[in-house]
Length: 374
Image (cartoon, rainbow, N blue to C red; front, side, top):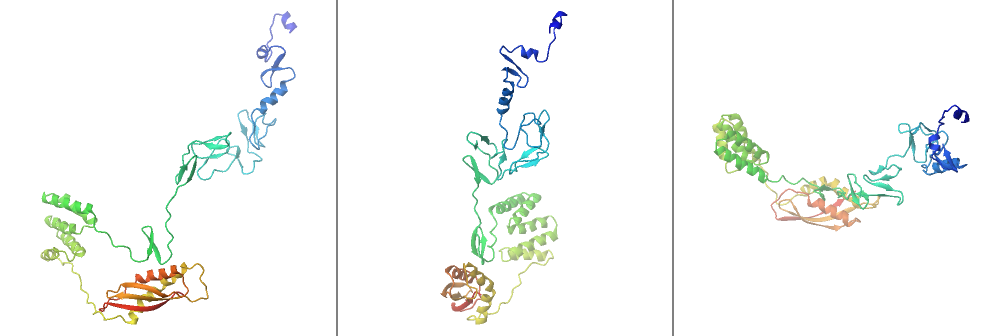
């Protein structure tokens, strides 16, 4: 410095500007880049390094230049790089992310920066050690406070044979209910088609009649035949008339429609009359036993309603029931349970009441019949 002063030169040493800011007795510390007391430079470095705590499993070293990195990593001036050699329990080493990561959160939760699992649109509060905020619950869940729970859904009942599920309820198995009558919409389309036909708009009328026919309105087929006949399409007219007769063979306009088909040179649809044998006065034992034998699998399925049936036991239920002349079961009861429970007996009666016997001429018949369930 003296030699530099003699020759009139000023030499600027590294850190001279920063050191000039320090007032005695403090001196400039390169490690902490601040003014510290003499001999306290290393202590200041240690205090600065201890200000930020590392995550569990991370360490500081010379290789990491004092930064928190996972074992086996190094500091490249911006971040820790390299695949970690060791990760905490439950974490996995990821080469793509160059870090130890936790597996994905369950139930629709998302991972927070600190590793905690919270619901979407929530945040982790270190002081409360809990997720805070109103969550955005995933589909199938509902919000309950600051959490999401499974939404309540109505479970379909578990029906045991011979019961079947229909409209959300367990009912005795059988044919599905008949198709409902055509709705109001089909009738309105039919009326709109008639109005369009009266105005001479055959194209619109035919389109409306087709929609009404698809909705189950049988009369629309007859008017479709009239439109085809006016347009000169004889074959289509005959087909439409026959479709009407097939759906409503006993309608008031059925005979007039048949006459129109014959006039056009077609063959009208007719219902074949099947000769039925005369009804007997009473049913024979064979006629009574045959429908009951067909329901044997359904009767045996009722035994499943018993919690612990004995494998060596023979369960037999004796029934007493009355049949109407139409073949329907009017009333029934169990005269002997044979060691079965009330649930099994009610199931047997349900199967019996759905059996249809052949008709007869007498007002009714009372039958006593044993049903073996094994």
